[in-house]
Amino acid sequence: MTGNVAVDMNKCWEALRKVIDPELQFDIVDLGLVYRLEAEGSTVNIDMTLTSPGCPLAPQMVMSAENELLKVEGVEKANVKLVWSPPWTPEMMSEEARMGLGW
Image 1 (cartoon, rainbow, N blue to C red):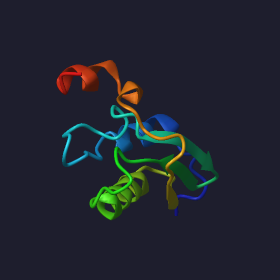
Image 2 (image 1 turned 90 degrees about the horizontal axis):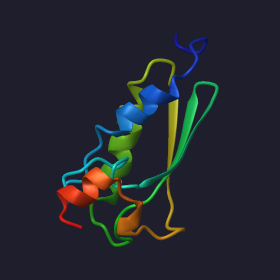
Image 3 (image 1 turned 90 degrees about the vertical axis):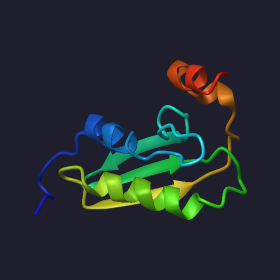
Image 4 (image 1 turned 30 degrees about the horizontal axis):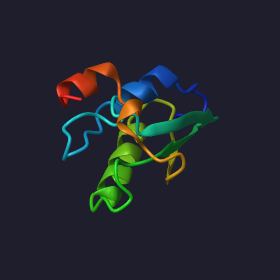
């Protein structure tokens, strides 16, 4: 049982770096798609967006984020909420991602 282990938020951020946008080939953190990441006990709550509201890979991306967070020690539940406000823009990406995409 992991309920008495404090959730390491740095490890949660590292876990989300394993979630790769299949079209852009960068992780959701560097793409600026994670708007909120918080732990409440053993539950991690994340608000994230996608580069496009019509993205056909939305269910896959949400499931990948949840699965990666559940691998972090102390995380028993991951609530991934897909949000559209504020709308994503390329300015939200890390400098590395912008350079890698030629932006």
